[in-house]
Amino acid sequence: MKKRITPIEALWYGLAFVVLIAIVAPSANAKIGQPDECALTAIAALKVAQMGKAKASNYIEVYFIKLSGYLWYHARGDEGRFLGWYREACEMRRAPRFIRVHGDRVVKGQGA
Image (cartoon, rainbow, N blue to C red; front, side):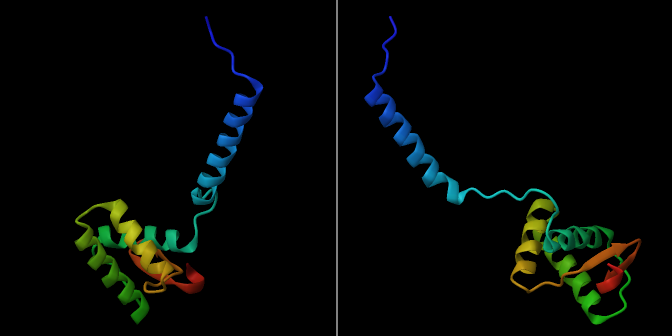
């Protein structure tokens, strides 16, 4: 036969559930919707790293190409690790932003 819980036990279970949610909720974060600028630039960096030869027109684009190759080499082909490293560097302002890839050209600024 099934044992029924008393109202006091139900109150304790409810209180424990609320406390558990209050502890877990601040650490939960989800990114839903449009990816941020660093994520978009990281995807462009992955394209450049896998492409090999890309054309640049200024020193920032050359730096972007070299940084992408460097990170790709040290990530040893692991795309997830590469994207994480580039996004982290971009968020710390150590890697360029607002860069996209059009064909074999790297474009910065308004053209991106």
